[in-house]
Image (tube, rainbow, N blue to C red; front, side, top):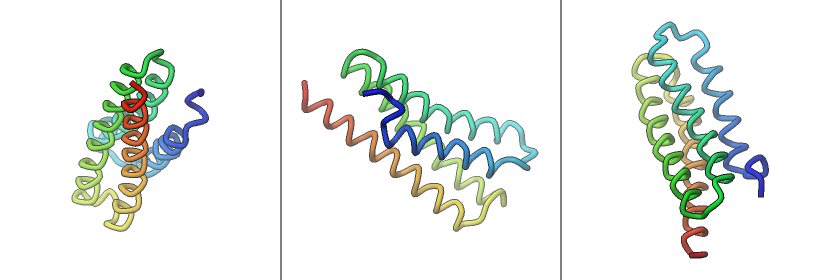
Length: 115
């Protein structure tokens, strides 16, 4: 399977675009950069894991992607606190992040059962 076929990678790509739109007018460049980089990390670690060549490496990269999901979720609370987004927007984006994280966990569990 190629990473472009994975639902979680496609969802992560959409998430990256959503975060870039959300932070477009944000003048807190350090905060904006950290949130964008964490979001990109989700997408890229899914891709890297898929092409890593072994189940154990794939699991490793999916765990990193899940960690980046947690970071993005945490930062989204700050987005709301700093009035960069509404509570509704935060919740909507966090739902998408959580779907990606759960998808990563599903693949991890499948790969673990193959060993």
